[in-house]
Image (cartoon, rainbow, N blue to C red; front, side):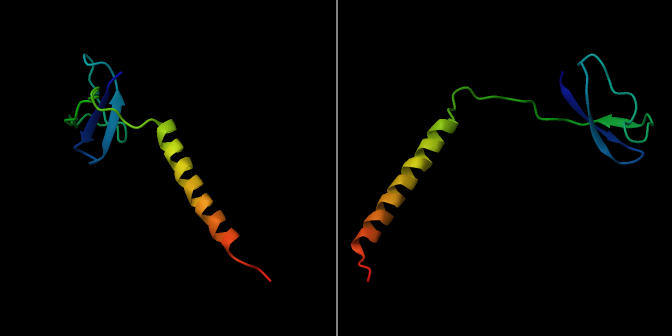
Length: 83
């Protein structure tokens, strides 16, 4: 069900309600009075053309970066001499 936002003109609170498009919220969910206004909302839109990085790809990148850092640290430690 869609989520609709409302504003109560009496208690000045904003709230949302889930209902079908043919239905309407009658009363404020906070104070119970009927003096409410429906707010304009941005519709939900998904752009199918934009490909986002998958979690696995991001994780693999961090693992590879950390492997390089560890290899550099190993080389640095092997080059030092201890008494």
